[in-house]
Structure formats: structure tokens, C-alpha cells
Image (cartoon, rainbow, N blue to C red; front, side, top):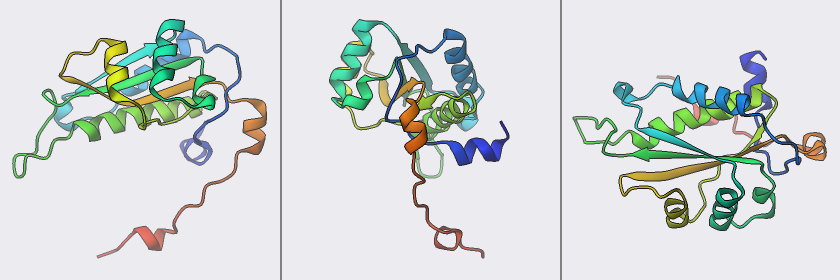
Length: 172
């Protein structure tokens, strides 16, 4: 897929089919995250692929939405602030930025592969930490439900309104 087409076709999937996602496709998603840039290349991230029924149930308890429960696979993106670069002039921690870049690489690769995916940041962090048995240094930041979009979702997907360039750009 051409890059412009990937960007234009990316959407948040909230209706999944029951078709399982092959492991090789998940590996391709993770490889795209591995190649993502990070501040000073510190890569303060870790990704947990959750496919077992036990783990899927635990994640579903952290975000109780019908559409979320339809996904066949979940990728939990975590960051470790102790591993991230801090800007010397003001101490700005780049962990959240680095993880977000890697997650968006996954999202764009999913679109390229014909998979459905959605950013989920509204979840019970403590439930996810407990389910994944994370140490205190690791913060779950994003859950990505992954699967094949349901046929009726693809047909009914509507374009989101976006601000015009002149509303978001200033030339100086």
C-alpha cells in the first residue's frame, strides 16, 4: 500500500470479525514498532501480546466495552520512565512520546496489512499491571485490540472530520 493510502485509510476499528490473526502478522506489527524512532534511541518500551483466553479476559475487565471484547488479539504497549531520555534544559520525559511513536507505527502497519486496530488509553491501569504482573517501573500506556474488521464495519466506516490545515498550521 502506498503511504498516503495507508494514512487515508487508517481508522479506529470498533467492530471485529471472529477470524484469528496469524502470528506472522502480529510479528510484522511488532517489527514496525521495533524500528520506530525514540529519543536518543533509548527505546523505553515493551509490548505484551495477549492471545490466551485468560489474558484476554483480564484485559477486557480493564475496559468493559462490547466492541473491545470482540478482538482476537491485544497488544499492550508499556513504557519505563527510568529508561527514557529526559531533555536536559527542562527535564521533559520523552517516554510517552517514544511509546506513542512506536504504537502509531503498529497502527499504520496494521492498516497496511488489512487488520483492524484501535488506540485504547481509557482503561484501568492497575488491573492491567496486575494481569501482566508488571514491576513498578513499567507503565501500561496503550491497549491495541487487533483483529480483522467486521464486514459491516468496513462498509459503514465514516470519515472523521478533521480541521483544515489553516486551522492547525502557522507559517512564520
